[in-house]
Image (cartoon, rainbow, N blue to C red; front, side, top):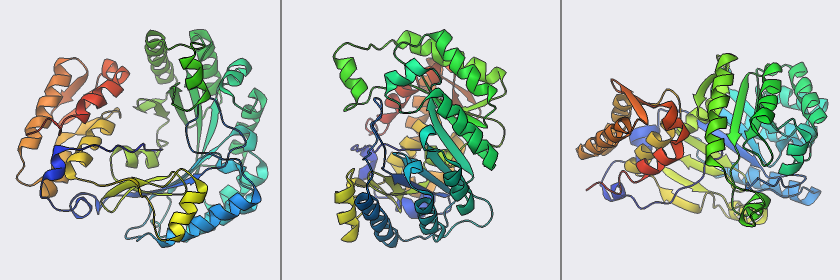
Length: 412
């Protein structure tokens, strides 16, 4: 998952408490995210940091990674690995093996761990897949977005329908444990019928996992410019309808929804994302990569040259760097936990944060009041200690998160 950083002044930051690292997270999993910033071209909707590769930039990238790895105190073994981008699949087979060797030298949990790699359809070749299989990758996520040529053109995607289908066949033939397809809906020019065509065709391929994202308009993207010019328009009513249609169709086909936008067959939920949504720890390597590790949250500069210069000087995760208070971490655990279908276990959260929050019992009274409001508004249900969003609440998950975001700002 690409976690966006939040820099908020919370009332809880002023409390005198034990460090978050020792009190809350030391016994929990550690994920590793590696950002590979190289892309052949920029899609109209993408706001992630990316650059076109050349020999000098790739050499600088690998040198920077080696420097950054040496800066981290690897106090616990890694439980999940995720390579995102950019397009990790633009690296050559030998470069993928080299990146795998760097990651493989880090302390990892014994036995099988989940190792995911994002790939664009046009970058999927048998040689690259074999290299990924050799280094231990278990999960491939293919950024299909759509199988309708006109919609792909509208997104600025550089692959064809035929390349997407061929990429899936190649991934399956190599035998990875899990295969995910990324799809997008509420695209310009896409009605419900066209979305259902994409969804049904994707389901017919029998992937292990499907991620279905509603198109968002990020600043500094080509789609944002089109929106500001009135060439495309937002339609919240249509978006809500497509959400509900998606959930119903996937449920009928045996996919279990475990988060607002993610569906899996039994045993194939993305463990790396679950670790992130549960607000445990992860280390981010590479330009723009975010980290939440050792009681600190921050991100690397979104610039290859600035990042490589920083890590060479012994500096990392300096952008938006903040020491995590128990209040901010608890708040985020509620926000992201409620996006998951299982919701959050309030008793478990209280047990997890009790050592850090100590005598500040008023915090839990504020949590209980906020949960009660969500239930009264029909956005959440509560069964004993577990709270989870209703279907209406999942449609308004961003609004629910915004309401919780002020939880500790309003605490006195």
